[in-house]
Length: 337
Ligand SMILES: [Zn+2]
Ligand SMILES: [Zn+2]
Image (cartoon, rainbow, N blue to C red):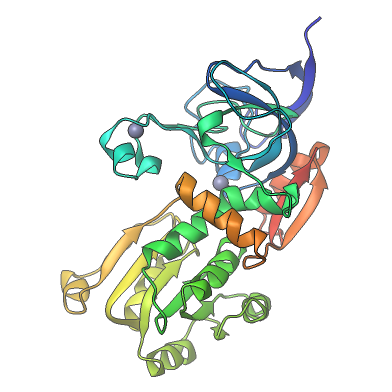
């Protein structure tokens, strides 16, 4: 008899994921079988589930890419010990040999595969992961605390690194949901004075409690206060609105960096002179490297990055997806197995 596990299958757009028993997969060469303990629910999962992004493989499919669990079985050539607690992020594996991989830009590898996208993901009691791509989770961090760091946390951290902040820099974070809250904390670790901006006044208080120098709703008061500090050396957008990009120009100090993480559904435009006159750099950012995953886990272990999480049992995965879709999630949602 085959061993079975409970998994949540994405069958059709917008329909609830179907929870049913299926065979436990077998890890191949260089792979490990991980028994899941916790998994974060990400907006990327919602985009696939709603059909806004097309999955590049057949359905039924298992989504989920912020998983933490323990190694219970391994394929040939793996040295990780059984019982090792590991995290699984968005990139399942990259080729390791192309120019991007060799340059340290492994998340831009054109031969990479993504967890839950090209291969089965973590919304299941067991998942196969690539041994070279798992992140070791220290005992100081619980599985549910570590899970959202593997995509949301590292995405915010990598965006902040690209901003090249220094002590005395002014960093403006647009959008103070889960990613923005991580970015507020990360930017302070680089010595920046951090300002948060969000339409929701309740989120401004959260930003201040996480150490933001100030937090504002968008508008003239925010522009005046930031210009009084000399302008923004970095603007980081986690808010999917095209207006945010425009407002970065009102705030920018000379040589500012604009880091775009959010995906507004309309294009935005600017005149060449707007970036030339101030020497502005515009950078797109998504996810982060394995090294950045290790670093964000280390910062959380040291208590320097905190997550606001809400946990649900795995069988309530559809409740979690719906709450995230409707913007009712306060912080990051994590399912426990
Ligand atoms: Zn994600
Ligand atoms: Zn590659």
